[in-house]
Image (cartoon, rainbow, N blue to C red; front, top):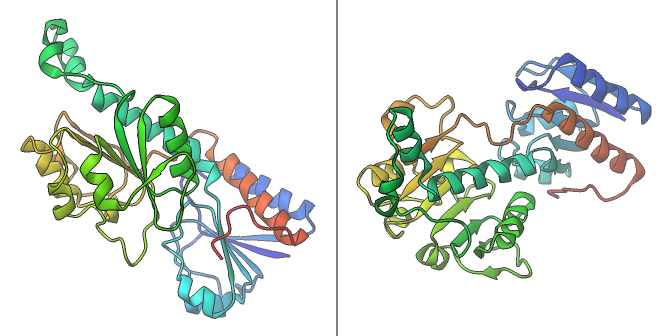
Length: 311
C-alpha cells in the first residue's frame, strides 16, 4: 500500500503526521506527504488521503493512478465524485473525528440562543441585574421544542439522538435515509413545523442554498437556524437580515460561502452567533484524524468494508 497524504490542515502538527505515518508503516505500507496544494510531479499512489484544502479532479486521478480517495473530512464536496465513479476509484471519508465536537457546538448554540443568554451577559457586563427582564426576553429550552435535523448522516443522527434524550421533538429530513424513531418529513413540511432548524447535510449540486430566501421567509418568527455543515447551504446575509428585522429569532453560523468571510461585522447582532468554522475543532483533532485514517486503511488492506464508504 502506497499512501500519498495530500494537503495539510492548520491543526495538523509534525508529531501528528509522524504518528499517522508510523501507523501506516506498521500496516506494511509506505507514506509520503505533499503539504502544498500543488501535487508533486511524482504523485503516483494507490491511496490518496486528502484534507479540505485540495480538490480531487479527473486530472488528479490520472496523475496519481489511485484506487482509493480517503477524505479526512466529513464532507466530500471537494472531490469530483463523477470522475471517481468513471475511473472506478473508491471514495471514503472520516466523519467520526469531528462528529461529537460538531454536535456539541451546534447544541451549545441552540441552548445559548434559545435561553437568550446574550442579552443577560451584556447586562451583566455593564453591571445591570437583569432578572426582572426575563419575562420580556421569554427564554426557552430544548425540552419540548420541535427541531428539524436536516441531514441524517453520522453527525445528523447523533444530533437527533441527543436532542431526543433532552426531550425535543425531532423531525428528520434526508431523502436518502429513513431513520428509526424519528419522524421523517420532506424539507418544506419540516420547516413549517420547526422551532429550531439545524443543518447537518453535505453539499452537492442539488442543494446549493437549500435554505434560500424563499424557504427562510416561510419560517416562523421565533425560529432559530443553526448551520455547522457547509456555508453554501444557507443564504446567510438574508438570514441575518431577517434577525435584524425580527423575522427570525436567531441564527448561529459556523460555516460561510466564502472563508474567511469578509462581512462578519455587517452580520453582527446579539441574536446572530458567528464562529470561524470552529465547530469541528478540538485540541486532540489531529490525533483523532490520524486514528480514523489508520482504521480505514487497515480495513482497505484486509478487504473489509470501509466504515464510512461513499461508494
